[in-house]
Image (cartoon, rainbow, N blue to C red; front, side):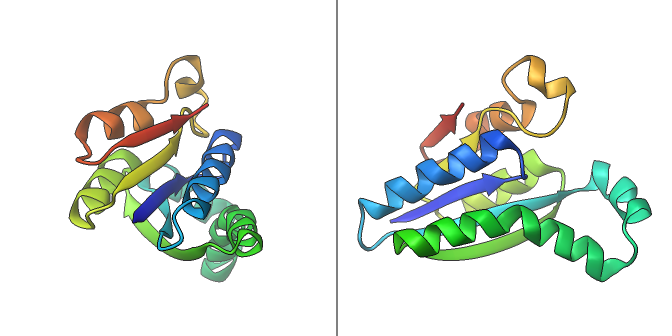
Length: 137
């Protein structure tokens, strides 16, 4: 079973990751895949604030580190995929192309505008991926 979780560093994404790890523990053959999308809309600001390309990459990896640690402690096999682009579109394309069995995603991400309603990324992803989606609040 292939379980994927989309991570952006938000608290909802971290809760989604914990849920995905728990789910993967119930299927011994399961592989968990962490998907992180470097958002083109935020990339310019991130580049301006970063000292160099290495520090930018390190900042992005730090958002994934807690999830990797939790998965290792739980004994779950994990793979990390970093994509670039518009998060909803990249997640949809990737999940559909990789034949993911279950996608877990946070209900809201880091975008403050999206915090008022169900996140636009999670909403778009739910509508367009071909696998079951669990949205974690």
